[in-house]
Length: 386
Image 1 (cartoon, helix red, strand yellow):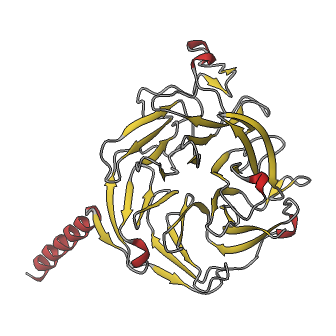
Image 2: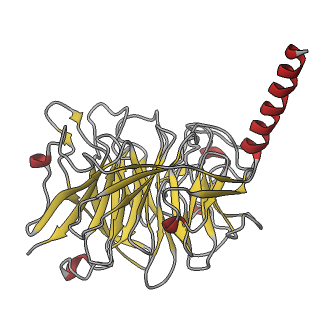
Image 3: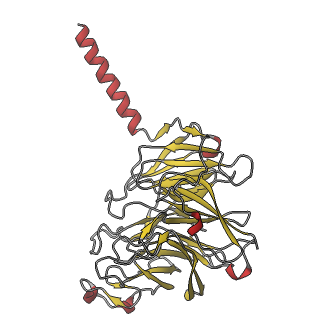
């Protein structure tokens, strides 16, 4: 009899556990840390080279720091790709050093993308989107709600960058599930968008191999995005891209054309490069451009106003590594006028070893800029001191 009761109890416990796991709303008990949040262990800060008058310092350390989003009350949220967590950072005394670090979610699959809107934090896994309700008031006990769970589950280019557009919709990319291929499902190699509740998902633009960073121009409100070029064509081709989308339905070439003019050796015979929207600016080959923001800082010198700042994560299979830096692009009405290095030094050119890899950039209200670095697990703050 005791064995029978134990068996029934075990079944009930398992059923409750499964029900909780699949429940769209769940409460998480987060972990708060206050010790050793800011240090320079393993960082080679003296190697970083910035233009005259600029300074860079450490704001916080966060394991595998990826995409960033700022809350209305000054909480910085950070996604993660190699791990399973989402973090929140608080600077309580205004010294631009993090004082509290929260783990607000864990057990997620590549939760790279984070976006903030109307008090809520949105987090993207590979195939799912979550909303953390009134997150800044609930950092120690976040409540999350699933809003969408029908994106492809492919791990290849499956991690996502997400952001809200001027139209109030949530934009979510879906990378190609391969290095180079055609897909029958038009959601691959695209940027999609949907309402904040997950309804009315649609493909916004196509032919985008793998974007892990996009933003909107502060004046014309057009969507600008980075795109990682294909591999296995040698060291110097194709270029990675910085693109502009001005309307729904545009196609940016993948897998048929790269960099606006380079016909793909496998698929290029099917369509002509002239059919597609050309890049604003071709970037370096295999630099792996990720996060991008237009400079809105009132403290940076005027020549930086409206420049696109791009985090180049760095090449992984090029004979001589390239990237591992922050670059800028000056453009006018979708045409690039300059492409320059702003910060370098995360890569030791002589040894070809990197100690950091930039992922995302974020301009703050005080005019400074945050940079995330997933290799060293660091959030940097860049200021202009004159």
